[in-house]
Image (cartoon, rainbow, N blue to C red):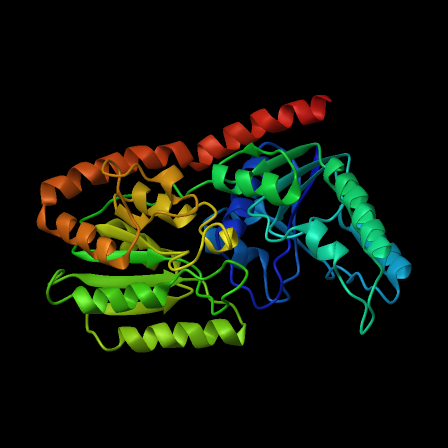
Length: 401
């Protein structure tokens, strides 16, 4: 029996989202294959029952292991803090035959027998950030900065070599992993939820994405802008249509304030609403009955200056397509890897285009029906079954090495 640890550096206050769905699918599949699997996390309130129910997997498919947070690396006591971090890393993953680390930021060093790094997106450039870090109130010589830069490049190289397999969740993430981290990775698309299926379709537009008030860290799904766009168009371009936006909501005050602002906008219409931490039955109902799916992460942001603010893949988009919703999504990030423009959905660059494409679908049910079927066919390329098959193919050489 192989002992497997899956780590997602999810801290208290954050809501469960697409990253944790990847964990859930891995836990379910690897447990079914006879492996002993643990999900390593930092959430005080998370229970196995809550996690399993949230993502629709058997409760015996996941074992949780709560761990302490990673010790900070401080400059005033650099060598001592490095020692503490090394001890923490060993305690984190040394016990496993296989350690899977799903990250946005700097990964923990792998001390397990084998390691797999899944890069959701590289949120920072380690050489620039680490080498330029300043001591409080002190200036440094160019030689000091150069030596520190070289030291961190050496450390970073060793950290990356501790993982035998490095993957990215999209070609978009792969490109920026190479640019920012100087690491080659293999694309493996994350799994979408194949349990979502079409039902009796109604004149509904749906958005699904975590509610976040942060304008950094690449988390804003732009629910506020989409809600305002719907309200401006509901009487003239989309008469008789509804708009629902659902998403996870954690405990951070910024997120709660943002959700409340979106909810306040929705309350000005009887045909719009915003729901946080929706139950799976409600998600199933709205996916199955909605005709159109909207997504706007990255709206108004420069893809070259802030690539982290785009959608790094888009599991919710694929979930919607599997349920027969026609995606009308922003032409940024990894969304063009999912949606074939004019075939399985529409890609837009402005909110006016989003409304225009949606109005076209609303007025032409034959067009919407054809694109709905094409969307369902396209979604099969990103199923959990495909993800697990490709993951097992990639991991086999790692164990044989």
